[in-house]
Length: 260
Ligand code: C8R
Image (cartoon, rainbow, N blue to C red; front, top):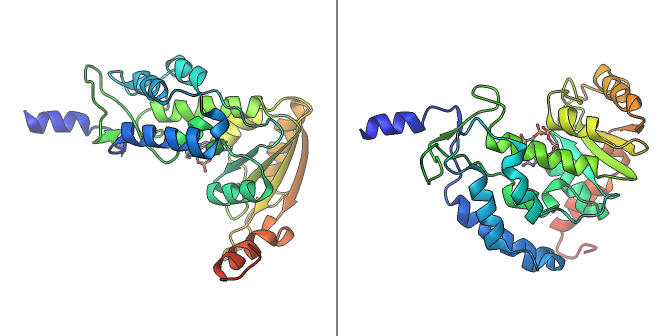
């Protein structure tokens, strides 16, 4: 019976739920609301955790809908400024560093983005527990899994409520820096409001040759998607050489008596 039980829970192709998922959500919620953003102190972390769990517990892990997350989103709606947003695709760490240095925000600076960053979660019909053996993979199992739908809903809201200049860091060391199948390509770019300006920074890995540029076909495709929506577009190649500040800061941090 154990073997049968295990093979049922093991049938998906993605990693299983992160061990101690609930505790991590709770710890992160207190950390965010009490320390990182004390202006969000009035949020109720117990309620937020409950809403997160009841979004997917006991449900078919391939049948996630936007509706499932409605209560969670209502409880933890982001309060970050609309004109300071940074998007990214395949450049997460650099984008976070860039945002921090410039006083801008990525989705992980909002409460829900912060809570779920790097975690996996899914349930099992008829069970009160998380499945820690395996969860559905976007490509191999189903696109409507709870993790993918979560990021999709959050990203859509983050992009559609952005205003002014929105920055995006894309990876020019890939053949297609703009990937139409990524969340940025499928969800964020097509949901920017008319009259927003999208500032694209094409960054290249220092050790690798650039493979895409602002004049390449993938960025041209992005440009056409945006112009249909009346979104203004600016593209700059190689953020690292134009903004040496990023690598300088890394270097300075290592010195005992740097500028900081
Ligand atoms: N965004 C999407 N996915 C996110 C995320 C986030 O903020 N934060 C995490 N940890 N993830 P990618 P992309 C996880 O292919 O598809 C927003 C999810 O599991 O490099 O274009 C954000 O605002 C997700 O499947 O990028 C950003 O602008 C991968 O990381 C885009 O969407 C996405 O990794 C990035 O999504």
